[in-house]
Structures are given as C-alpha cells and as structure tokens.
Image (cartoon, rainbow, N blue to C red):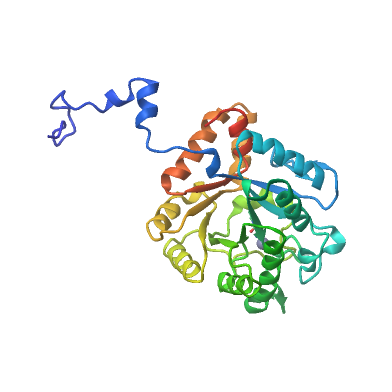
Length: 336
Ligand code: PBG
Ligand code: ZN
C-alpha cells in the first residue's frame, strides 16, 4: 500500500498527496482547520473617562478607550462579526491602593462597561472580564502583599468580591488571571452564594511567567513595582505542571480553561486539549501581536498571511477559542 520504499523513494505513482493541493477550491474543501469569527475574543482596555482614545505605542492598532468610544468600537466590531469581548479596567491613579479597592467601586470602568453592554446587546455578545488585582494595586502585583510577598489565601476573598461585582453587573464569564491557588473554587462558591450560578468561569489555568506580556503591562500600567511574577505564574520550562493546573481548575469548577501565551506554547495547548473535555481558550498575547506588527511595519512579513497562519496554528494545536488583538483587523480586512 505504501507508495514509498524504506529509503523514501516513490515506488508507485498511485498515491499522490499533491492531488489534494492542486486547486484553491480543493485545498479549502479538505482543509482540516478553520478560524471562525465567533471563536475570536477581542480584548479591550477601558479608561475611567467618558471619552478618550490613547494609542498604545507598542501595540499599533490598539488603544485604551473611554466609555463612549469603547461602546462605539464594540458596535463597529459587532458589524464585523465579533461576538465576544474581554474587558480590562484602567482605574484612575487615585483609586489604586494596596488592596485593589478600585475594582469594586461603582465608577470602575469595567463595571460601567458591563451595564452598558448588557443594556445594548444583552446576550448577543459574550462578555468576559479579566479578574485580577494588578491594575488596581499601587504595588502592581496580582495579589495582596504580606511582608513583601504575595499572600495566597487573603487574596482569594478579594478576588471573589471582584468576580461577584463583575457577575452582578452582567459578565457572562469571569476570567481570573492571578494564578493564586484555589481561586476558582473561591470564586465559584462566592458566585453561587450570591445566586449567580449561571455566570461561568474561564480560568487562566495555565499562565506562564512570560516576557511576551511586556506590551500589555505598558497598556494596562500593571507592571509590578518590585519583584516579578515568578512566584505565582508558571515556569516556561514546564508542561506536566500545566496538566496539574488544568486538572485542579476543572475540579474546582472552571467552565473553560485557558493556556497563555499561545504561540510559544502550542505544545501545551495540545497537551491540555488531550486531558480535558472543557472548551479550551488560548491567549495570543500582546508580545505575540507586537512582534508581528513590528515585522509587518518593516515590510519583513506579510501581515495578512502571518496572522491567518498564527491563528490557524493555535486552532490546530487544539484551542477552541482564541483571544487575540488581531481579531478586529483579521475580520475587517478579510484575513481569515
Ligand atoms: C493580568 C494580566 C496580564 C495579561 C492578562 N491579564 C499580564 C500579566 O500577568 O502580567 C497579559 C495579556 C497580554 O500580554 O496580552 N494578570
Ligand atoms: Zn494580574
């Protein structure tokens, strides 16, 4: 049956894989992987002002938006077919403190955006909110500090309060990105106690201590003042640990899991895919976006084709859902 002998030489002309690559119509018919608009999630950085658009220099094409401008952007994105958003809040400087209190104030940009989105679109849009403290703490860490280190258990109660606030305001899924142990269980219990059992949890279950988050930290002004995140985010050398984290979060009640970053961790996406029946998301992070943009600006890469190839790779590895800053342009400009 095999067309090749043991040295790989073609021994029979009968079987020729190239027949399936002969025309664009055949290739598209037998293509195994597709990237659909409703599998993409567009991230947003929300300013605390009503109006405003601040470009992020390391992320060309992405801006921090004031409330009204954000709503206009979502309306435009809906016309392109984007059906999901992930919200990050950028509180006023005076609302940053050691406990991240700003995340549950009525004037928080995420809480305001949630009510407005639900009023405008209700369930037509899938709304995810990032649940973390780093953009809201004056020290920039993802949890509460006790004598200089991030204290796991005291952080859980605070994260649960933030998640409940988001859920009450209308989030469909809360997405904890802090990497504290036990936070999915803590959030699930708090949501259920509050009568919010319909609100889901997308857990950033497998989140590495990656240098690809650099541009995001500029965008969200969330870099830690001192130290790094290696005491809570995962070591890039590990994959067994990814399966452990994924299994724990599933057991704690996560509805969806995430691997982050995506492109440098396609093997991890594949491994997690084979070890869970939950939907799997992958976060095509800021640095992965910025390097494509930079190379495209220099004329070194064809952006349209590279973005399609990257998104397709993430799907092929096993992700169902992709969070990507490329989502809008990919749909607007027909790259998929
Ligand atoms: C906050 C958070 C980060 C990202 C998502 N949520 C940054 C970090 O952990 O330092 C990264 C997203 C990106 O780089 O696009 N915990
Ligand atoms: Zn954080």
